[in-house]
Image: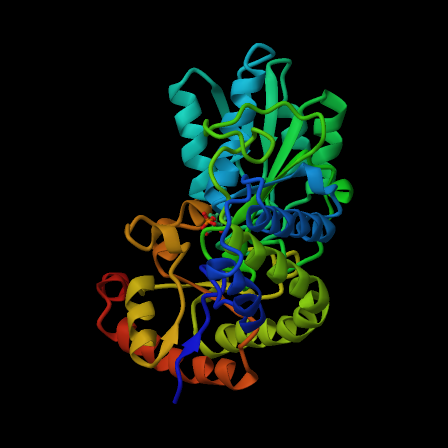
Amino acid sequence: MGRIYLDYAATTPVHPEVVKAMLPYFSEVFGNPSAIYSCGQEAAAALEEARVKVAGLIGSRSEEIVFTSGGTEADNMALIGVANAMHSRGNHIITTAIEHHAIIEAARFLEKNGFELTYLGVDDQGIVDPDEVRRAITDKTILVSVMLANNELGTIQPLAEISRATRQAGVYLHTDAVQAVGRIPVNVDELGVDLLSMSAHKLYGPKGAGALYIRKGVRMEPITHGGGQERTRRSGTQNVAGIVGLSRAVELAGQEMAAEAERLTPLRDRLIQGILEGIDHSYLNGHAVKRLPNNANLSFDFVEGESMCLNLDLKGICVSTGSACSSSNLEPSHVLLAMGVPSQLAHGSLRFTLGKWTEPADIDRVLEALPPIVAKLRAMSPLLKNRR
Ligand SMILES: Cc1ncc(COP(=O)(O)O)c(C=O)c1O
């Protein structure tokens, strides 16, 4: 039996069409896009074509797209770049307790450098209240950053409502849309955002390529200084092959996203229902409906997430215990804790994220494999013994 990969939120395999589009840019069209001779200009033309395609998926203008090395860099650019450009107007930034570490750590860096940060909480479904955003804005606020879809839970935030508050107050709004782009429709005007981060490797593109959308007129200082690429907003020779890969991935997502969401939603729901019905003391984390079509995140009482994850791996099933970035530390998920999930239950959580190559039979195999694993682990669990 082949391996079952259910961790598409951590990263995705590169689509064969994307690989095909990228290949010429390694050795045929290898010129530096800043060079004025023809093989440089060919690479520059590929970048501009990619910019148009990326802009097309999110409804922006191509000159509002800055290519980056991925989601982390885009997030850092948005927070630190806006903070540095706007600090004469104010030093207050609002974000949430459930952001990816790329935002949380950039925010902590700004705190160390004299900025005041507010981390908004979420309700028990993992959703931010737009009224709380409105109430948190002061005359010193320069930026609000709220992710569009959470990487652990897949919960989708009410960005359009949040943007009404930021627009009214004249405050910039950034969204980390790394998990959302390519999975649900994303339009910068409908959301009312001024900055938006995306990453290629979450949508069947390569690792190390991404983009930051910056609405025309938004003030942002560069965080890298050098040759002035990307209209001086991000110096450094562009990753041409990676960016071409991003743009092909974006193009494919535009064509396939709706059908893919329709295919995955019932599979996701069957997985959730099957687990809730088949395993006692199991709970869905996050909103049942306002979530990405491919995400199922559940907690199991009296059992450790890591043990379940390793036992599933022995059966050839790859899932995650939280975000990929935190699998090296054993702290319970900051997202689940922010939702009020008790620490012990947060330790017993699994994230299943489905994707292009997930088949109904894969869900059957998980529903077959997981109950005996949980039963075996519970039978030797000190957590359960202590309760008896
Ligand atoms: C919500 C979110 N933001 C940012 C990132 C970081 O993106 P990258 O891996 O491209 O740096 C990730 C990746 O896990 C993510 O899920």
